[in-house]
Length: 539
Image (cartoon, rainbow, N blue to C red; front, side, top):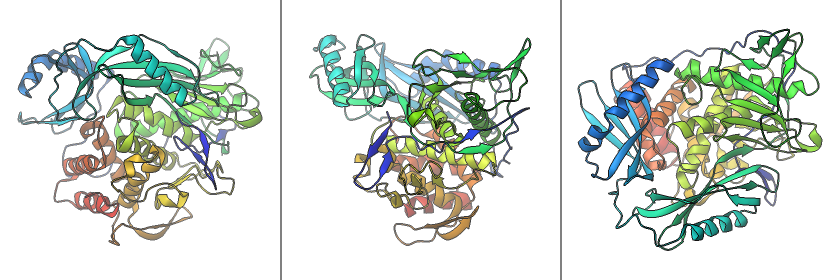
């Protein structure tokens, strides 16, 4: 869960970076600007699959999962469940699997099998530990696990909590030696009104809490405006609806200050939108469209889950709710109206950042804790920033400042800085052995800084009227390769080489693999990736 918290000098966002905007009037078809694909030295770019082709690829992969499990040396009690398939232009296939052991889910057991057209095979695993436990019979009763999970929610100060399901036995393999455990989902409400869906992992032998993760992706801000924007709407009878038939049927609803359900679909008589309650709906609909177009035009990704299906948006959530959140459970974005219900938190940056959490959940599934949590949060900052550049909105031009419009600090400064993250007073510029102990929104600074250095290079420069001055940990000079290529490398690393437990050292390896596949291991791009990671002290 992310919310506003207070430091001695500043208010800081304990979550996704948000930059709010509200659209005015809009008619017509959303015209997201296509960004050119960078030149590639190899055929390692992903092939865009139709919905039917992807479904067929998933089924074929599942049909061969038993044989693959044997070929990569898994035990007799282990099985593979296909989660995603990525096919490259050169014929390489990357198949992402979840793993089970004796029928129990293995959390942290995910892996990716990479098979070249020649038949050469390699595997990227979330854990190299052998998956085995002495028994799948738990010494601890489910009721004890439930009690432990409720205590975790109480410590987080959630209210009206309840364990929504009976604790489920799992194998916990994300850290250390795999153990039999319980997974309990506790639902409730945070103090600020944000829903909570806390996933708690409890050792089935000792009752010790091993891990907890908040499944609701949230953030906070104050709205600014993006000017006149174009929308794709659908006509039904004599009225128009905020339903985007060009982008998976994405719908935008008015919750009318409610906190559950979908609310009422926005409609209009003349397809000229804006003013009153509509403004927040227009802005949310626009943000979702730009996010869809960014992923489609830049990476060939067909929606958040790459299945051609749109999410949906809900605006006017709660009463004076100063937050916005992504919920992978409902596959939806939700926006509050801010203090006094006067500043809806509906912006392009909010949408792109938060929906990118959905992309991460559908691909690498980076655990939201420690260094993998920092990488998860940074991925949303990276693609939220990239979508802002992609939109080419003259009112909110692209920059490497996170949250520059919301004035969350009260002094006009951004929430985060990608060129030198420590300027926010809390984020890490460089990797250190303790960086994983930071809040994930501050440990994300390492990857944010890496992306800036890889895109633009070190030193002083001005981009779109904003001055930057990015240092390196060792004083070395880094030459950037351009944001477009940096985006391609990060996306390929996320979707084909990262797993749920990827840390910064593994992220360096993943991005080098991605750069090598896309541009060659002797290319300037490959060398720049190594130099940029060295610049943030990841070696």
